[in-house]
Length: 111
Image 1: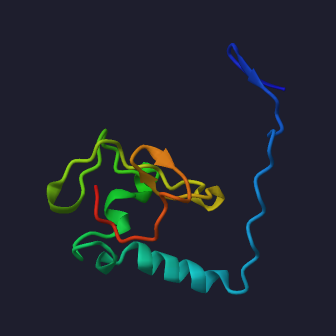
Image 2: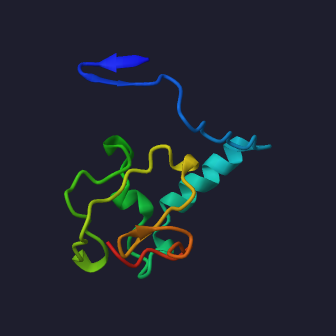
Image 3: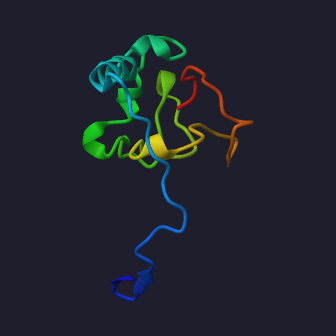
């Protein structure tokens, strides 16, 4: 059992994290991932990359209380961190809920 101040919890996770797949050429996939992450063409109007809002030096957030997106649109929530995203099943938040029905592999069109 781990204890910090008055908080305590079991040292083992109740549900273990899934194993990540072993990739045959991880360096090539990393290079491709970085290229896509920085590609502005993937946004709805071709002006913003994922890296614009998900800044590595800020834990892959933008450090702002509310996200600012295309054409200066201010969102209703902050930019979520991408740390440990490999363990996430669903990647997009839509209308306050998270799930595969609301998930889409869409181009960035909202802040």
